[in-house]
Amino acid sequence: MKRSLMSLMLSAIAFTAAPAQNLPSSEQVLPPGFGTLKQEDLQIALATSSLSIRFTPLDPRVINLLAPDAYQAMAALVTSNRPRIDSAARANAVSRPGIAFVQFYGLAPGANFDAQALVLVFRGRLLRPIAILPYSPNFNDGRLEPRQQVTAFYLFEEQIPVLEPFSLQYRQQFSTEWTSNRVSQINRERQACLLRASKGTTSTAPVPAPTR
Image: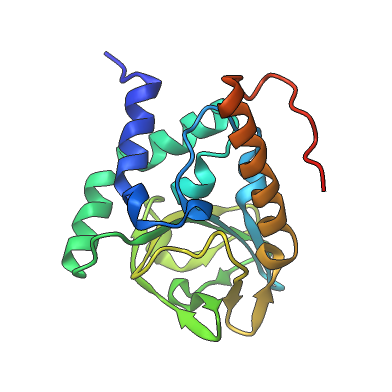
């Protein structure tokens, strides 16, 4: 029997969400089911001459803002890989790791990539992955052909700062997409979700635009 959507939601939320009393109200995890964002709205894109990289934080503070279908897909992804993620976190003595799903896509023949070279820059610090868990069988080959893609889970020692500006860095390439676009979009969606939740409406119902 397939697990219900609600059980998937609870499993995904419980994995990374801190108790509400330990967080300021602006960072508390909102309930899923009231969001309208697409998966692409949570991605950071970065490209080199031979690679395209997509970085998606799997943090309930933003994943719960997805539209229901998109949320179900991401929740199922986390839940089905939770044993591996938990094991890697315990091996690194981390109880609440930051988690991201990363895609490397080949743009040129024989494109080599260094998975460890992908880091976050936050408040002048480099946040390096403490573990990389391949999702694609050939991820560890470190080589791609055009239109070939591989994916993996990235674990960080601390939660990804999804409600604040941060940058993605791969070698000498940077993406400030989260700072320039995503933070403001997420904050608007959080306010809209709070309004929907207070009215008991779902994400399919029209919601008035927030006033300035």
